[in-house]
Length: 600
Image (cartoon, rainbow, N blue to C red; front, top):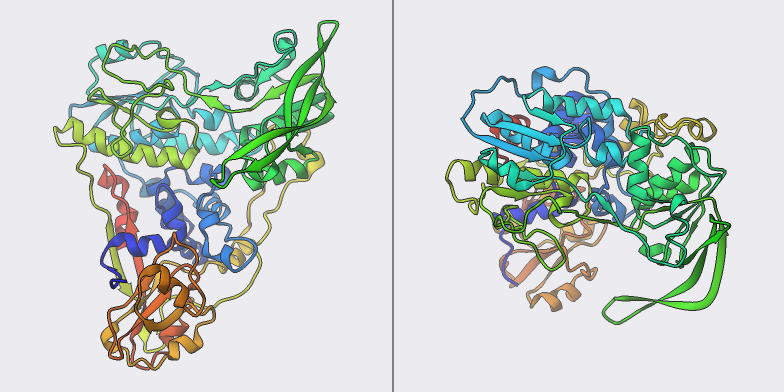
C-alpha cells in the first residue's frame, strides 16, 4: 500500500466517526468536552451553527452518529450523543447575544421558501445574514413542517419547537402562513430570484386489500392522523387499535393512540423485526408503554360486519435472503385475525407534486420525483432548488438540515452569478495536544462505564397526557457521568516516520492490538497480516512510508481507542496525539462564528 495521505482533510475526518456520520458534520467530541466543562451555551452554539435545531434534535434526531460511535465497538452501547445535545440546549441560558444580529443590509435578492420545515428554515437561517429577503410559504397556520405535525408533543414539546423556530423568524424571515402553494408557475411569476422547494413528503401510502373501501370510516393514514392530533382536530380513537407499519411514524401512531384512550394497541409489520425501519429506541419506547410489535404479519383483509370494521386478517410470512442480500417474504400458509375498532396505516410516505407544472422546465423521473443534483440540490430549471424529503423522499431532520446548508450555498452562488458547481472547501487543522513528552491537554483515560439511562416520566401519568414529555433528559450529574464515556476520537494518533526507531514499544502497549510493523503488501493481504486482522473495509488503514528495516507501520483505524498509550510509551516522540478540527463551510459566515472559533 502507498503511505497514507494525512494531509487530505477527509482522512482524519472519517476517523472521527460520529462527526463523519452526522449529515451536518457537527463536531461532536468538541461539544461533549464543552458540556464536561459546563460551558453549555458554547456547546449549544457549536451545535446551532451546524445543525440549527439543537433542542429539537436533542430529542428526536434519528442519531446516525450513535451507530458510528467508537464506544459502541467495545461496549454494548455508544455514547448518548443525542441526549447530550439536549443537555446543552436545556442548560444554555440566554444565548441571544451570541446569535447573528440583524437587521442585515439588504442585497436586493429575494428567495421563496416553499414549506416551513427544517430544510427551508435552514436555508433561511443561512441566507438572511447575507442580506437576502426570504419569503416563507406554509399551508399550515404555524411553521415547523413535520416537526410540528408528525412528531407528537410528548416527544417534542411545542415550546421547544417554538423557541428554535422563533430564533430563525427573529433573523427577519417573512412568513406567509396559511397560504398553500398550488402552482409553482405562479410563484415564479412573482419574480423571485430563486425558489427552494422544501415541502416534504406529505402523502401517506395506502393499502389496496379487500375491505378497504367498506372500512374506510375507521382506517386512517398515519401521518394524516398525527397531523389531525397535533392541530387538535382529533381527540379520541377506538378502544382497540391496530397500527400497520414498522417505521418511526408507526411508533408515534401507536403511542399517540394510547394517549387518546385506546386500551389495546398492536403494531404489525410485514418484515422480520431486524428489518424494521423504526429506530431501536423508538421500538423500545413503544414496548415500554405496553405496545406489542408483531413481525412477519402481512395485512390480507379488513374484516367488516354490518358496515363496521371489526378486525384485520393477516397472513403470516417468513423471510428468505438471497446471496445478494435481497429479501423475499414468503407466506407460511398461516393466518391470524386481530380484532380492532380502528386501523392506523403507517406504511410509508410519497412526495406529491401535482402543483408543479410539467412544462416549466422542472424535469421529473419515472417515479414522479424531481430530477435533483445531489451536490448542488438544483433542479433542471435554473434557480429552482429542492431539499429535505421533497428531494429524494422521506429522511429525517438532520438530513434536511444538511440539504438546507448545501442548497443555501447554491442559491447564493446562483443569485451572485457564480457557478453553483464550485463548492467551498472545508476548514480543518491538526494541532498537537502535547504538554510534555507524556502529558496531554485532553482527558485520555479509558473507563468501561456503561451508558447512562435517560430518566422517563411515570408511565401511568404520561399515558394520560398527550403533551407531557416522556423523556426527562439528563440532569447535570448524569450528563457529567455520560460525557466521560466519550473517547475523544477527534484527537488523532499521528505517526512521524523519521522519528521511529522500530522498538515496537507501541505495539506492546496497545490495548487493542491495532498497531503492526510488517513488510508492506497490497491492501487485502496487508489487512490479514496485522496482529488483529482489519476486517472493516469501510475504515482505512493508516500506513507509513518505508522504515529503515523495510517494514511499514500499519494502524487499523477501526479499532483504535485514541487512548494515547502509544504516544506515552514511545521513547522518541514518533507518535503524537493531535486534535483534528473539521468544519463544513456554509453560505453565511455570520452563522459560522463559533465553528470558525473552534477551528482557531
